[in-house]
Length: 489
Image (tube, rainbow, N blue to C red; front, side):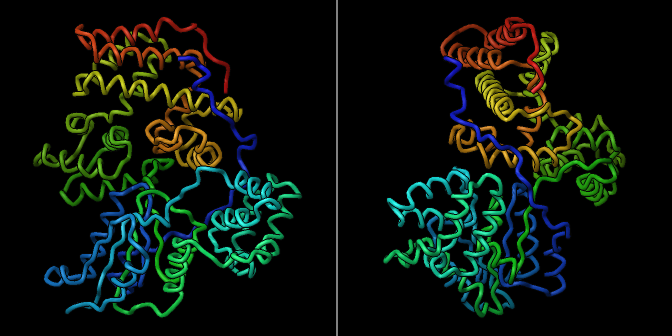
């Protein structure tokens, strides 16, 4: 497999643009508000932590609806093709023998972040066809700004705010000609006879915005849940914030110290419900082995509590006995040992992963995936001239200052399939991989990926012992490299 097949098509020259500071005010406590009978007509719950979203949703329903009337007053809408009018027709129904009617809509498409092309590229493409195809030029920008063509023509407040925000975001990336193009969009749109013709999706969004800005039902609660991030510039998100509650549930990241780690308090409080305490070392091991994933943490706590019985203090051995190291970290240890050319440690890590129950073929596929991600990260880092990312850089700092900007700028030129794109993974995966890039050159990563793909064919077609094949792969990767480290990124 030639190395050039792995090269990126292009990488944008600018890296970190000025980042807007997000409000530092803590988000409202939705559950506490509902307990105090402060109920809003609409909620948006989103983020990577689906466990926290579902937990919050369950508690909201427990407070809003009684078990005996829940079936009459609760509607779940999960069809990706559900229309706004169908959603609102359910929300406008009056509750039956209850104070509230609740409508839950999962993963509505109009919230999703769908930005395969960077904004500056979209602007430049629209600018190029301003004369030859003004209709398409305006419709392209309308979609980017999430406004209608008619709102552009009328210089509607939604358009003015959206275009000002876009110009501020792109800043120095815009040429004077492109900036002038954005400023004269209303004049271009006014010259089009069909500027008021909108797509069905835009009509749907307009209907929802009109509903949110109108006289909302007094006894209905509309709850949108979205797994993953939402576009905060989205008009609907802003409209929901104005009349309801918008809450993003992101991974619980490690704090600078144990007492300032929010997950430590959550875990300690949970163990306290069972009259137990967890030692700091045991908690650190628990966080490492679960990756901080709340769903995995909750399952681990239940296992530990059942395992220790009457024992009150949870120590490292209890965690080690009941919580296996997550697959990603195990594979990371393996590839890290290969990067250090430590054959003994690499073989030890390989045997530990196999002993945990991992099958050889999926394990090799995971190893190949790891090297594929490392190669993508290496190429991106070299093109962007990133400095070495050390372990002392916090996960939050990496996510906000490196991962998120990279995902916006170059995520679209990597493979579309999420399983083959490092910038479509959980940021924790990229965080760990970017820290080890100095261990390999590009050529070494290409060789490692090729060897792991060859092993895949061997495992599926050969009779020899699968463990021996994987052992041979590890030894070759540790010994057949150039023996030198790449220069700092």
